[in-house]
Image (cartoon, rainbow, N blue to C red; front, side, top):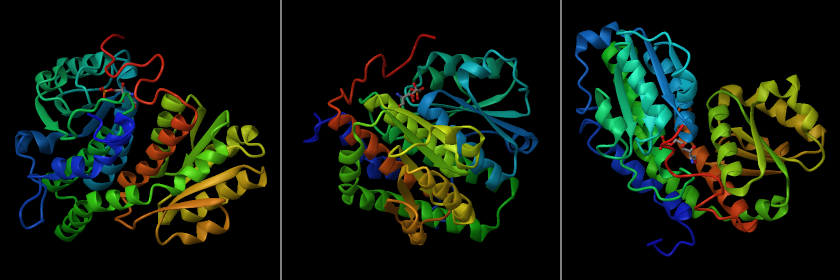
Length: 366
Ligand code: M6R
């Protein structure tokens, strides 16, 4: 049932190109000019009145929400808040009938996420659920459902569900942009063209996955690891850090690269592994200067960089490259090396990859 793979997690990582294709399927107009989300039935009039988007979720799904915040604000020019469901539900959030709430949950059964959804509906918001399980509680209670078609995810560590959640954020961002007229047609077409190429690009990263193993061998006995990035790279850094601690039990932290010198730099000492995400051309110089800061403390830096930013090899110890894509879509590619890193670390530390200690696949209690 693991399809020849040692673990469900590795199988699911390799299923990502297919999961992305399935999630895209039928959601793009045949001429590639628009996103078509037939399952979302928000009346035009209501769509026009939306003045705020709130995204809520837990864990990895929340990390997809952080990307959603960035993407929806950029594409549709609406203010977006992303908040952890267990926080949102207890703080009497500013949500009303003009708020669009997006709830993200692989299982569709997470207790806090479901409670946040119900609270949002009580306050009159329109709620879209992004979930992987047909007819789950979250799907049933939402106004509209955008299914991720990742297929059943067995490993506790979420991989293929997360990548399809990311894709859903881009689809929703484009959908809202279309309805609000915030993007030119040619921009929409360009993003869609690049979105469609992502499954093959993820597949190409998976084919080259082996060079991660060397880094893993060198660092699998470490106690701490740090993930740094700016903008979208920071959101992916948070996911990379969660994956690593969840399955390899290495203490990992993600930091917005610019925050390092506000405290965390004190923890950066000789040989500490730092994973630096460098996919954003516009933030390149800034992140490189943060890499230099940690190198000056003799940390070991593994950079995950977009093709075209090869100069980073001059400052990092090792670089894993992801293929070029639209600058907003890099998350879908950059997360793959994060997943493989966590996986091989866990394997070399002989951890129970698919069933990490203390964790359950679906958290139906608070
Ligand atoms: O089923 P959900 O997406 O609502 O689950 C949310 C989190 O419990 C989940 O993403 C968790 O963080 C994963 N184990 C991370 O790999």
